[in-house]
Length: 619
Image (tube, rainbow, N blue to C red; front, side, top):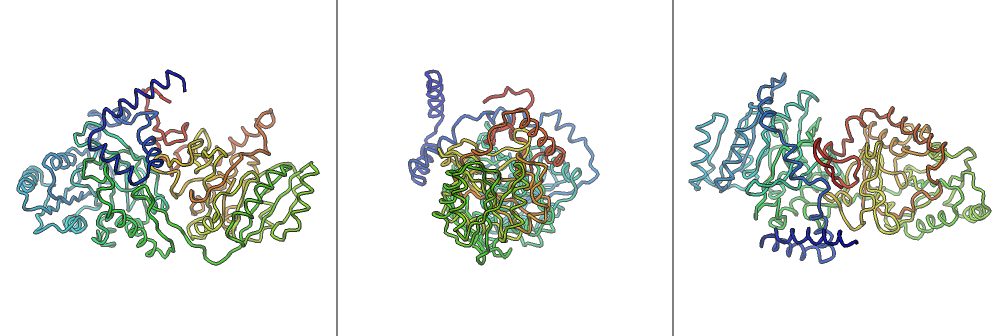
């Protein structure tokens, strides 16, 4: 580190510590006790390292100005649904309560009602404020409950008051952006019907003087919802769905919204995501938003909510809370002992292949697999001597591909000779880290809705090589979290939790053979680049999920045998494959990866915010 950089770093940390309140210091000690020193330092670095595009000034440019809001109020939609915003109130501070209600009154879409169930009728100040606002606007309704029934039952009392076509959930101390309902109605008019709708969100200080920690969400991801209640706020659902699923369940108090969201999405035919920051989650000392440890019981309730969802959907799985509070791992058991066909193309590279195979044999705890090695025009005596040795192993089968290198054609050729129900495409330049890698991938891939599974790949220096693929990143597609330290979890822990993605790398990818054949295998026009991305997009298009599973890790030595794109023919071929992808997948490249977010960068791999027009680019 040079002197200027070191000085800059010291200034940044000095500013940080000056901003720390006694409460923040106490919170730091709680996290230190929970995570231990090493993990605490990793998370401290992730939490406070400077953003490449700082969110607070970004949000000031992003939020609609008064002129925009004025125009929204004049817009007439052909579809004008009614909304019931339900709020359970309990001893809400006057300022917070007024600001919450005012955020409804400031909405640029007017077909709404506010349904408040007051669980603190003895609080005269709360009652007086509710009376005041109800007298001011006929859309505001409230009910003083005889006693506090808890957040779940209080919310159900508010549900019972609702008459709107859609119901939206709002906490008593949070805020809606003034364009929240407008953007939802706009989406319904432009994109068609939906049973469940959710939006992006951020956090805001008690004083409303700073917005921070934005949550830019993907479109619906079943595996991400099983890992964390990423949907959270703002959540809107058809009233008919609420009537069908039965409202909140008090057994899950603390995670009642996670349980409720699961039941709603299970019943929904269409789930929509509006990628706009439309909900502001206020943080204060008792708020779970700022102090997760304040409600430890909520995380046990979250575990039970996921378990109940798995039971309702007939899915076997063991749920384990992660160290990061509010995040979970679901481990899916293997059904039976199906044969896995591990397919490895190879040219020369004796030592590389040997390291790969020896790691499979030494580390794997699942035994029912075959290895298919596709020999592609090797020239060294050494590799053929090794092949002769391998031929004695009944689990290893050697195939010869005599034509020029074409990754897609080679693998399609190998699949025709594969006996397994499950295919595992594997590079020769990887070595296994996780002993139960085959069981872990197989348990996920056996699920009815899953077509393919990819894993976390690391460079030998323990930095990340692959943690899922985003379509559009860098032009066509790119890996996420490249070069980030493997012990870091990244933006909202996405490097380390299971989730659905548009694509994964075939350096290590398992697929159902039936799904592979259904989608026509690899596209042979893509001989080197993007063939795995194309295959995954075909899997998604056919209605199956592609899952990123970080609980399997391998070292990847990164395409030793292929070489660089360093001559005219290779450059021409690469450009042709780019054009092939652009023509085949125009819609997703134009509209954006549904498992990413339009507000995030396509030139940075770490979920950086995309600069808005007029903002100075940083980083």
